[in-house]
Amino acid sequence: MGNLLRVLTKDDSAKNYDAYVDFENAQPTEIEIDVWAKVNEVLLSSNSILVDMANYHGAAEEIRLAISFPQNEEHQENAWLAVYPMVLKLKEFYEFSISLENVIPVLLRELCSSNLTSRQHLETQQALFKQFAEILDFVLKFDDLKMTTPAIQNDFSYYRRTVSRKRMANDDSKEGETEVSNEMANRMSLFYAHATPMLKTLSDTTTKFVTQLSKNSIGSSRDQEDPSSVGLCFFPPGASGCINEGEHKDLPVEITTDCLSTMANICREMTENPNYCSRFKNEETKWFCLRVMVGVIILYDHVHPVGAFAKNSGIDVKRCLKLLKDQDSEKVEVLLNAIRYTTLHLNDESTPRSIKCMLAN
Image (cartoon, rainbow, N blue to C red; front, side, top):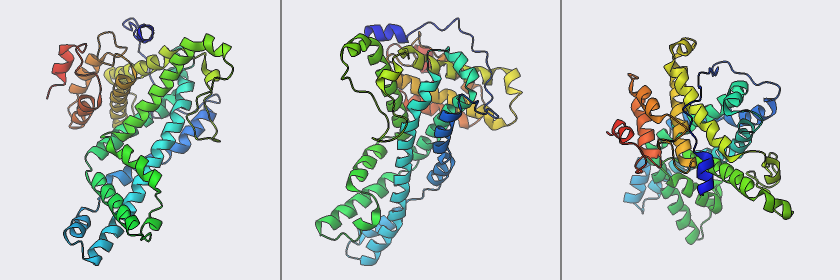
């Protein structure tokens, strides 16, 4: 771990993040198009997922009546008819998280190869950078909606209790309607148990990617002696895009975290710099940059062993926080709360007191 920390923790003070990424108009180059198309196929559903999540109303009243009057068959049926479509939506959201889990390593592989520096990657692969930014933006928006929708846990708990009760009574009439197997329900239950389930998916997948690079760099000589070593695959058996361990021994572990820190710092610079802001055709682009900056800070804090707040972090978090606090909008509080409540290392001793004070309520 000591060697890994030295590799990952670098002084970025001399780096220049004066770069512009055209989030509004970036189009894939010929080199990017294959990966871009795979990721785009997944992202096409992201907006509809957010709309459905925002419109998730739950079945609280129907469930309350069903529980209050357990002998009333009409209330039981009404509760089931209300919960059933909600559970199918929850299944759809969960399956989307699996799709993200499958494409994130493919995207990271392209953005983190060792033939270019992190900045060169983000300047020459702007369409892929935009897609990763869109994933971060989606994750923040989805999890914010999830945290303010307690009906999700209530609906799913009622669904599972009802199916369990029917199963014990040997009545499979309801179970057959659900299109949710018991195994799927178990996995969904674990997914929605997290306050920020999409962030958990993103951070776990990225951590797995970084950890595998670490294993490759540390144990490459051992692997050469052991031809039976098994490759890593983030995809289901038989799916295309499997990442084989042997194909990525040229990816230094530090490039992934360096790529993340570069993303955050470039988004900050684009929002701070009036010359760049003036090029935005849409006001929302500025907020997109800010959300992506915050998303990267959170992801970096989950992936990096020392987190995002340490003095030698690759991200100038203090400057990012000052930028956020300079914005006169209620939107900022949502982003600040995301940093306060979804990062891992904010309360560490290594976190400067000035940063803790800036995030104090």
